[in-house]
Image (tube, rainbow, N blue to C red; front, side):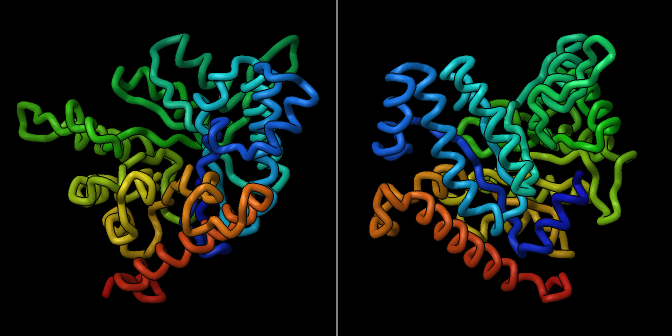
Length: 318
């Protein structure tokens, strides 16, 4: 799956993943009205509203980007109807040829971790038949509980041809409370995580030279990103923090390797809620999905300009 993701980045010239993290504040009123007319102002109505919202955006961006990243919490808040919208979103993205990164941040041990891995990467066996309940292509993982919380996912990904992204240095302001703490040998916690990512991915290097075990490194910490990149030469990096969280295109550059690859940049509300931003106000609520398309085009131009300033056309660093 890592090669499918990388090949999509190359084909679309877009190291971009769109975060499908809807909440009702982002959904235009006319979409909510349509959903509530059928299901009422209920959990079912909310689930329908975010599904209609997602579908419209997917229809406008699937030809521009290789991947999407639905954050499951934004669906779980609406209970079972929300999870049904999550599954419909994942399935529809696959129909459109998109790679789906399930932002689930799981991290438990033993049989619990194995159950999560079956549920999200599949398969689960029932009565001699195999099912893929959520069927994401990648999932995000929290490694805080150690190898036995991660390796069941790595094993399942190997069996199903999928992948994982492991939290290494996250973009949130308080990430340093734990991730920047120094150990006895002078390494910081995020550096230990980075070394583990490289170790866990050693047996799954694809044709493009990258592992199916990737990392999450926030764009808001470019110096730490430079260190993490050096420790994980074969890991693809999922990079949050661009745009709405304050990171610029230049801040992203330490996550890339000298081949011009190695990272995929996430933007969530900067794209899906673009219609609410001043620079896209001309689209209005009824063309919200077109505003999202334009936001992707603008992001693509911004990132590729930054990459061009550092890397030559053949991936050689200037």
